[in-house]
Every structure is written in structure tokens, then in C-alpha cells.
Image 1 (cartoon, helix red, strand yellow):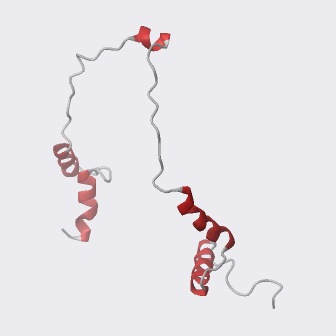
Image 2: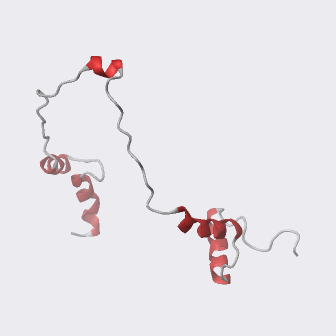
Image 3: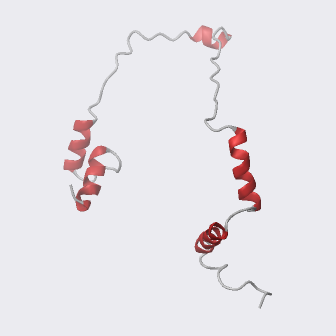
Length: 110
């Protein structure tokens, strides 16, 4: 596969919308419609509306712990104890995001 073929295959596999019949045919072959038999499913509206069904509570536990994140927040807010090359890189990134508006000498320091 070459880089020229990448958009065609991305459209064929569903990462982009298909743009022609060939891409659509490939997509449909990969993702053939599966029908699920729902004839045995039952819904008891009376239990739902009467509150007889209990909600299931799912606990979410983040992967990162607060004590691991705290030092990162301090650096992000204060910039303390950062090496000069890291500070320069942060300033450069901020200048690029602002379209170079902050580059050059600061006003009032000349």
C-alpha cells in the first residue's frame, strides 16, 4: 500500500466516509449487517414506571491518583524549578499558538 492509496482504504474501512461504489462495497463486505433476534426480549413497563427496578450504580475509579497529579499541577501553575530549556520550549509553543504575537522583546523592557 502506498500513501496515495491511504484515503481510499480509510474510506473502505470506515475511518472516512466512502466516496465511490468500490469503497462502499468494501465497507459493506467488512461490516455486513448483523441482525439480532429480539423476539425473546421483554419489557415490563409497569416495573419501570413503578420504581420496582433498582438502578445499578457503576463506580468509576480514575487510573491516575490525586497524589500523582498534584506535582504536575504545581509545575503547570507556577513553573517553578523548570529547567531553562523547558521554559524556552513552553514560551516558543505559546508564541506559535498566538501567531507570533508574543515573540520578540516585551513592551516596556526596551
